[in-house]
Image 1 (cartoon, rainbow, N blue to C red):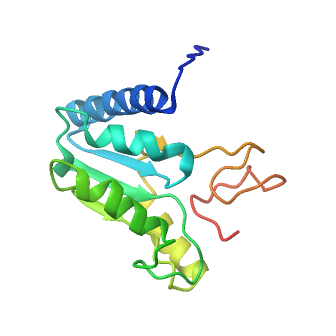
Image 2 (cartoon, rainbow, N blue to C red; image 1 turned 90 degrees about the vertical axis):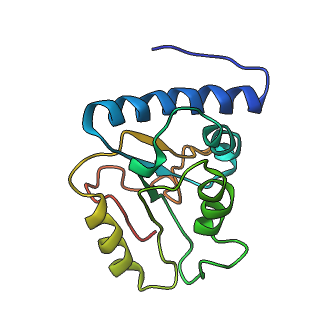
Length: 156
């Protein structure tokens, strides 16, 4: 295992974005397209910003999946995670994405999990930029969440 230590959040974000961008470029070269998953957690702010500046990515061949959203929240609500990704990632890219599969917070939660999970089924994402909280949580899955599930999306 390689461990890297950085002095600032900006340096960490830039390094993570560079590593993710390299995986995206490799997938584009090998498969012609790439699928990525992104969170809108505070731990990802610098990564998201730095990734928009990475050169030589054919964004028109990249499909973005949204990691998590609040139940019952509209896509234009100030606290919406999909709004965050649209404003701070999608809108700042130098090119248009192939697709962006946002979670619709106003849809019935289990149906929405099935909808987005079905689109994610098949080919695995090449990059997942996710937040891991201080207590080990991933997205809204706080311990003692069931981390053994095979479902890509869950209502928690």
